[in-house]
Image (tube, rainbow, N blue to C red; front, side, top):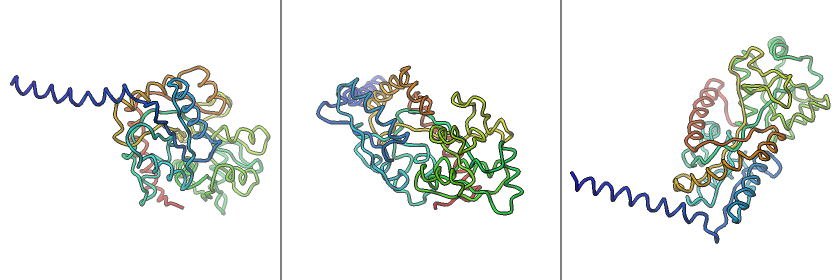
Length: 324
C-alpha cells in the first residue's frame, strides 16, 4: 500500500511541476501575446480586445497586440485561434454567437466549442427591440397585435444568421406566437440603417448602437431583451415585464484560448483580466457603451456556454432555423 501511495504521489508531483513552471515563466518576455478579434475595428469585440490588451500589457510590461481577423460572421477569426498552439500566446474575444450558436447552426463549421478553453467572461451587453418611428406601435402588446393582424408579415433585421439579434427575433416569434420575416444583413450598421429608413419594420440591437437613433426620434424603443431594466433607459420596460415571460437575449463576450492551454496559464490570465474588469474606471467605461463588465472563474464561463448552447439549440430546432 505504501509503495502504491508513493507512486501516486510521485505521479501527482510530476504532473504539477510543468503546470507550475508554465505559470512562473508565462508570459515569456520575448514572445508577444496576440488577441484575435474576429470582427472589424470599432465594435464591442474590438473595444474589449483592446481594453484587455492594454491592461495586460501595462501590468506585465509585455507586448500584447490585437489582430482583427474578419470574415464568415466571425468564424474565421475564432477558427484561427482554435487551431493555434495551446500555449497562451494566442487568445480570442469570442461573442456568444460564435461559441454557443454557430457550432449548432452551421453543420460544416470548421471548429467545435470544445476546441476553445474558457478564460473569463469579459462583458454583457443589453439588447433593445426597436421599430421604425413610422410604425404605429408603442408597446410590445401593440407590436404583437400588429403582427397577428397584418396580412403581409412584419420584418425584422439582423446583422446575419446566428447573431444574437437573429435569435432574439426568432425567440420573439416563438414565445410571442407571431410570424415575422427575417431580413439578414452583413453588419449592424446596414441593418439599423434600413430600419431607420423604413425598409424593415424592427430589429433587436445593442442598446449603445440604437440609442442615438432612439434619442433623435428615428427609432422607437419597445422593450429590453434583458432580465432587468437599463440605467441608460430606466423608464423602458423589459420584454418579460410586458407579458413574454422569462424572455432574455443578452449579448456577451468571452476571452478564450485554444483547448488544452495549461490550467496555470488560464488561471493567470483569468486573475489578471478579472482584476482589470473590476476596476471602477473599466466598469464606467463599459457602462457608457451599454455594457456591464464581466469576471468570474473559467468554470463559471464553461457552465454558461453549456447552458446557453442547449437553450439556443432547442430554439434553432423548434424554429427550423437554417444558415442564410
